[in-house]
Length: 459
Image 1: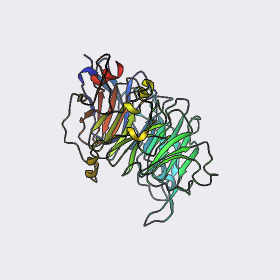
Image 2: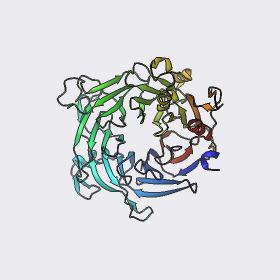
Image 3: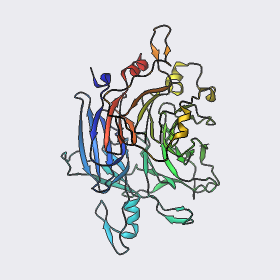
């Protein structure tokens, strides 16, 4: 019996604080994930972890990094490269200089930008021997520009805003990346990797969109096929942008293709496109809800899943079976949801016509739980589990011809392997039934889609 059948969890733990996890999407032959340590009291590290399904073992390679890692993203065009958001460091006095990763001296006037707001494209060299002596090698530096920010203390102050997220376009030919700060989203083209400091090609911010209120940007997500379209979140709103329009020459919000105001009742922290239905978008917010939208008619959510009791940090569609949706949050839970009614499987089956009435398919589950959400993340009190929960049969449809159960919308399984906030959950690029999740205490857990749900999809 394989690991997926018996529902075993596999844990990779380190005694470091972690916020970021990435599936190495460019490697479709191995179940490979990368995680970065914050480096609060120790040097930063990047761990590349392989799950060997034939042996049910975890193996890792550790790379020293120049600073702590706030966020990272896999580059689909090269699995040996990563985009890394460095944690900020306190700048030195105005007379001092520092040394960059490449070894060139840098004045301290730019140190706050370089160290505190730097995004690096780094290589994980495959010819180095495994061990803690491995080092990441910087290929390029992505340095966002300063933006105007206003507050009750500093009105319209120009200063570098440190990035907190980076997102690569999923197409291997694209080589575009979005760097996210609270004040802007900047698009970079990394096709010419000979450039140590490539120039950005597009920026969305309050200064470039004077007629649109853009504040407290949370995250961004790329359209899965269109390299000129991406979506952003600011506070409780979702906006979709088209980079084919020159934003610096635009008058008003002409580059904004779609806007969903008040998509959540609290800040949105997670966003992900359905890779097979590119007009379908999932969002997760501080209200504990996961909502799925049709960007062709975003007046109301197609589906609402409210199975988290606290903030939602991560949502992701399964790239092969998009009726499966992962979500993770500060309640310490990883939820595997079924969203079959808004999936490509529903379109192929032709059940009742697709999205003819988006409002009719909206489902609100445990809505009353959203009113009791706390103000701060809490740790889960659940014990480590070695088996996935089975999906309830109460809402399953029965096939009249074969007597087999069909997938239905709702919670498939809830994984409580973590004891602190779970910041990320991602699918493997090699196995469509395998996923990994990461919590703040440095625990990465490998889990599987329950066998029962797998058979519902395949049979």
